[in-house]
Amino acid sequence: MERPIRSAAARPFPRLYLDEDLTDDLGELLRAEGFDAIHTRDASRKGAIDPRQLAFAVEEHRVVVTANLVHFRMLHEAWLNWAPLQNPDQPRPHPGILAVPNPNVMPAGVMARVIADLAGDDHSKGVENRLLQWRIGLGLRDLSSIR
Image (tube, rainbow, N blue to C red; front, side, top):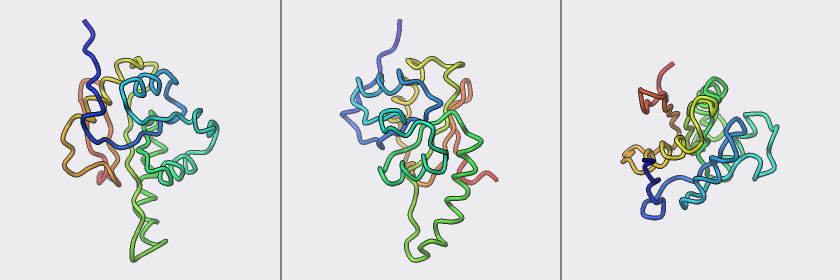
């Protein structure tokens, strides 16, 4: 028996921006459960390079959800190093990055439940300026300060 996704309405959770390496189904499933989630295709940003995807997410105050850990890990580290140089008095944070398994490995329905469960957990530090990775069998780990 499939476990239902917990309702998003009862708790605050960051707005989500789903990278184009994830399926359209994931966005539809999350929106059906009350999450504010848009896909790159919804935002007419399909094919934009990853730095521009992150910049869009920052402008829209949305956490990036991606299966592309390699590129977004580099972007996360660059952001943390360069944002203070742009405005030393008030560096602009990114809303967060959540790396998930490739959709070929994990179906959209399962991934939606994982994201919903993560949203329900108490992330006392929040996700701002953090790079989180969720892996099958290992769960969530914070890669924010791992070099």
